[in-house]
Image 1 (tube, helix red, strand yellow):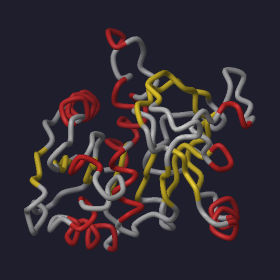
Image 2 (cartoon, helix red, strand yellow; image 1 turned 180 degrees about the horizontal axis):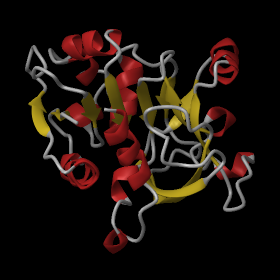
Image 3 (spheres, rainbow, N blue to C red; image 1 turned 135 degrees about the horizontal axis):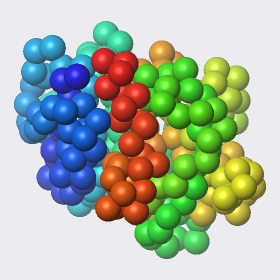
Image 4 (tube, rainbow, N blue to C red; image 1 turned 180 degrees about the vertical axis):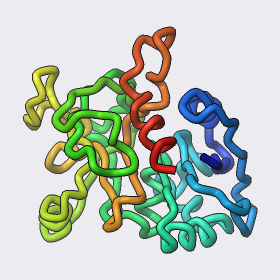
Length: 229
């Protein structure tokens, strides 16, 4: 699989993401600078990782969404290419219109840096074939603006089309309101595009891909991508 990681001013999770991708695929991902106007030939996966692009001025991801590289990324999405956006990457994808909804300030207006649990909602996508449906996985989260919100019609459409990828749940797998510590609507931790080829999620699966990290709950996501490509 040929993967590329986009670097914006303020990105800080690129090394973690590169480790996860290389562990799953055996190949080192390319580094893509935000001012580039084309993607490398034959690229399979584009990754927008976490951090604070452009210092989170205006809204998180709003400036990065208008960077030169976002045009070829949108074209990659239109061709059915794979795109993964984690944390700030999820925010950028929403700001760029590649995913619906928005990420607002966390409930309680506090930055959250802790472990959460997510439930895998489906396993027939390029991102989740190595999971089991309903599986509860651990993932670190570190964000101040992770409160996913959309209008009722959009939320209903996401539910009806099976585009909710992960939900915040308790250890027992219950999607109760208190499990969504950031206040996300309907406990949504991640969503897909209409063709299921673009995934945005707030928690960081790349930070649990090795026992030395405390577990491997995130590794199946990257193994799924490697198998899909």
